[in-house]
Image 1 (spheres, one colour):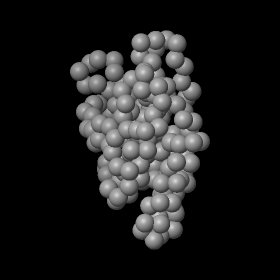
Image 2 (spheres, one colour):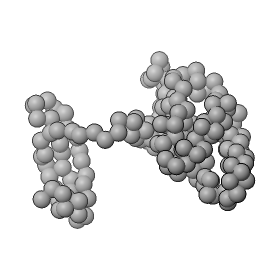
Image 3 (cartoon, helix red, strand yellow):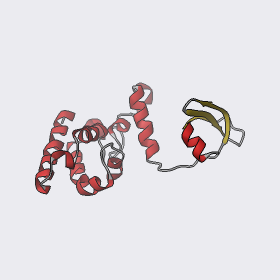
Image 4 (cartoon, helix red, strand yellow):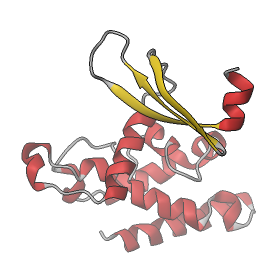
Length: 166
């Protein structure tokens, strides 16, 4: 099944849900949310929570039915390579032949953001260095206090710095 066909199936399901509830289509899910769902190819409710346009209420009301459609439409392109349930961009990566897979910058960032979002809230301890206040942002590096060469480059809105860090 192509992505266009999957999008059409999801739109048909949205119409069914809207008719059942007696509401307008956009009140169930927007076109953009459906497009993002097809793009992400979620396999679980947790994956669905990472898709733009889905909130807790919509996941509770429609998530299971939408995931059934997603599961029915999964192709070997997605299920042969890696785990089912990961968004398509992560499943696309063939870990057995990693040197042969080339991501675009946006695909790579999408995969990184999805992976990091699964961690939830994290706290990192380090030493602040190289701090520069430029206009509306504060740039700084967070270094590993253990002496290792690990460094994270960071950006913080100046208003947030002024409010929370001073």
